[in-house]
Length: 124
Image (tube, rainbow, N blue to C red; front, side):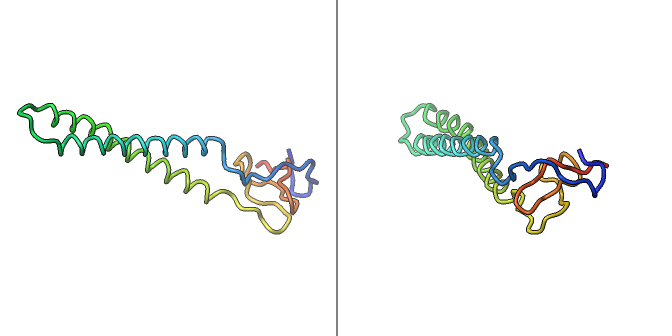
């Protein structure tokens, strides 16, 4: 840990431009939920458009499929949108070497040596 701005940075660490692992999992769950929600909503529409056979079975099935499908569809689209938004707002590489905002938020500042983030960080 660095105690002052004059301390020389020690070893370099890999820059954090790769997406966080849970971002990929969120995207996978979002796509899966969107597909399942779409299929359930399509099933609800099929039951709702079925010819009336004198019972409420088709209507109840349509309502059940719709009540499961629409929230799954909304959740899936929300998760995909959030995962994409997080991916494109990932920290960018600074151009000039020097003390920069810490991309890992472990300290207020971390040293960028021009190619990689270093292990050195400034602690208040």
